[in-house]
Image (cartoon, rainbow, N blue to C red):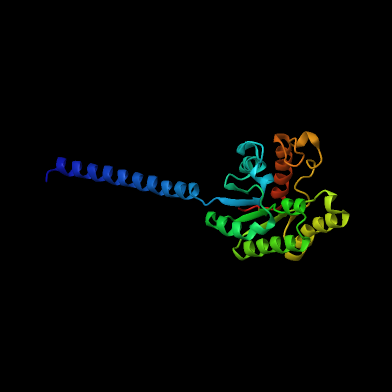
Length: 224
């Protein structure tokens, strides 16, 4: 091989090495980017009834969707699963949580109980059902957050007090964070509710979302 041929071969080798190096660096950077992009989301299941489902408003106006929009600005990995079902009582909680496990939630916000109170379900039954959900969620490795609820004194003051006490008592026994009252600033306020006086309107859902977002920012781990 002559001198010219040797130089050509050397130049080709240099170009080949440079190209391969560039491809390797691009591939490595792509793997890093792909790994970051595909980092698993942190899913929060809000397990509730028609209040959570968003009865009477559009899905995107219900508080779970509003909370997700707010929390994504705080941490883009967060996803909210709307686990609301109209008419559900606490008795449906354990079975429905089993079904939602397939979505692999990292945490659950338990908002069930309103229909129990409105129907006069025995306080002991409601407590037992909610406790079953808490234990089941913990066993599955989920973080558990409990939203407190209140009922009007239709069944007497004693029932209303006993019902309200379910939530702080369970939070204390199981050492889980408690949002004292899900409907703070909404319950009993005509401008915050539909004409039935029970279900929040768009304005009411915005208030619930603001309260719940503030609560979750205070209890969720900083390093999600």
